[in-house]
Amino acid sequence: MNTETSGDGINLRRLLPFLAILLVATVGFFLLRDLLSFETLRDNRESLIAWRDGNYAIAVMTFMAIYVVVVAFSLPGATVMTLTGGFLFGTFPGTLFNVASATLGAIAIFLAAKSGLGDMLHRKMLAQSPDESRMRRIEAGLRRNEVSYLLLMRLVPAVPFFIANLAPAFMGVGLRNFALTTFFGIIPGGLVYTAVGAGLGDVFSRGETPDLGIIFEWQILGPILGLCLLAALPILLKAFSNKKEMQP
Image 1 (cartoon, helix red, strand yellow):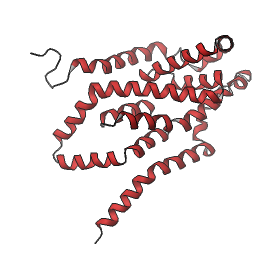
Image 2 (cartoon, rainbow, N blue to C red):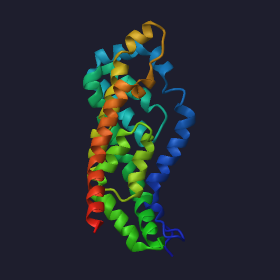
Image 3 (spheres, rainbow, N blue to C red):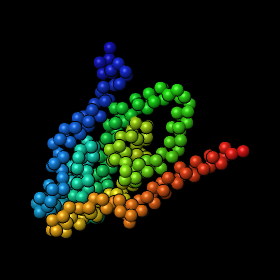
Image 4 (tube, rainbow, N blue to C red):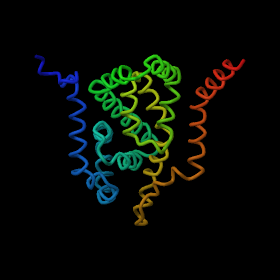
């Protein structure tokens, strides 16, 4: 008997990366939710700036490594890390550091989920469907519009980041499209929050807290919705074309 495989066919060895992420995320939620906070950044701002000024390259690498871990293990504090990137490194290159780190972390959790559960769930979805041919047609439609769907998941502010990391793994999405759409899709939101972080010095001096709801203000949300429409355009055009072909 293969002790590495459970009764329903799940390979336990392949499942370990996903289980490790789940365990660390659960522990981190209780241990780090107060540590990775705006208050911690505010109380340690002078020492952080001094550390950055004295060890810039090390500060960049350390910051990015911590950000990758936070995203990869779905730990609380990703927004604070984005603000910190802006606070320490400015809107640019802070946005680049933030987006690159978030993308690497997203790739890590995507690969862990895909190797552990994604392929198995994908096979079961097809096998248990009462109309497998229909499911395959739906999947083929997703494949044809994969980039558009993935970009929409990243651009729409209402979609939680960790869901946008895990859902594609369970739908059989390829790594290349996932990585590219993650990187480019999170740039608008990342730019907004990094810019907010870059202005934290003035916020701290006034004793205020940053306005994270700024992304829902029309002057910010409008262009993002425009990008959403642009990403959805290929889907709409194909749907219209197919409907027109079906008409007598």
